[in-house]
Image 1 (spheres, one colour):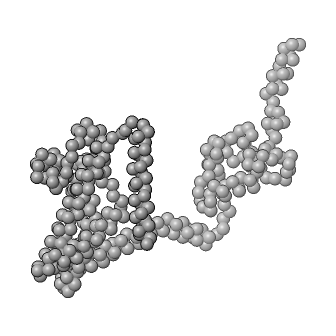
Image 2 (cartoon, one colour; image 1 turned 30 degrees about the vertical axis):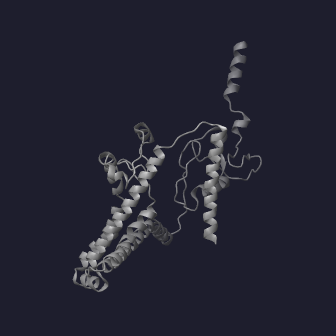
Image 3 (tube, rainbow, N blue to C red; image 1 turned 90 degrees about the vertical axis):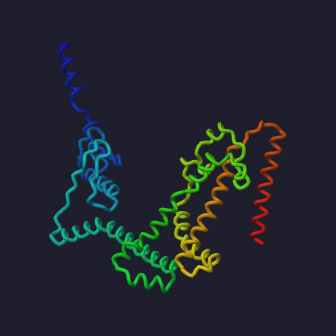
Length: 318
């Protein structure tokens, strides 16, 4: 008798309860008793409470995931099974329109990229032609380009801005400054032009390669816009300097080359001096004790700097 009762209990535990058989939508959490006419679907391998879902609720959920792209695949968020989505046949003409739409969507990024690259290419050609006329003279430049092969111009003219930008990205001033520090720091006469200061070696090593210490391993941080503008303005500035300081030279090309060399040399010397002063300032900094006297000194220095900035701003407004 006891065995029969035990078998009956095991059979009742194996049978599913009413709660397990009750359909419940995992989107809106409604049951089949709430809407007996609603269509149900079991779209994936989930079991339990996430097994069933309303057809309409799942359709809205799929629309949110596809975001207008009906060809995008949608997976179950639980078991990661792809939903089987089928569409009714709409005829050959609609299929053709769908194919055209899909091809247009796929090739549009490539067309946009081609248009952008073509625009950049022709802008580079225009800049190269203007630079040639600016450097060698307007009339001489036109005659030179008219006599040259068009294919050669299409290849060489765009390389002018590319070469200028590439040359601008190389900081030759850091290499020169490193050479001066290593081999020329002990020359007394040079210290009157470029101060080297008394920098502790340990402090210099601890400071490490920074954007302004001029070490060969450092790379000065320059924004791309600054590199771009500085590089493209070199021919114009070189032409202006050549016309101002080298008027006696009749050849436009030679005058522009001398003006460019003068501009690059003067600018490089100023950058070397500025980097060296920043290096000395950084390597010679000190951290003071937190005392009342040092705190007052620190506050007075900051107040003086803020007053000078405010005074400069007021002068600019006036």
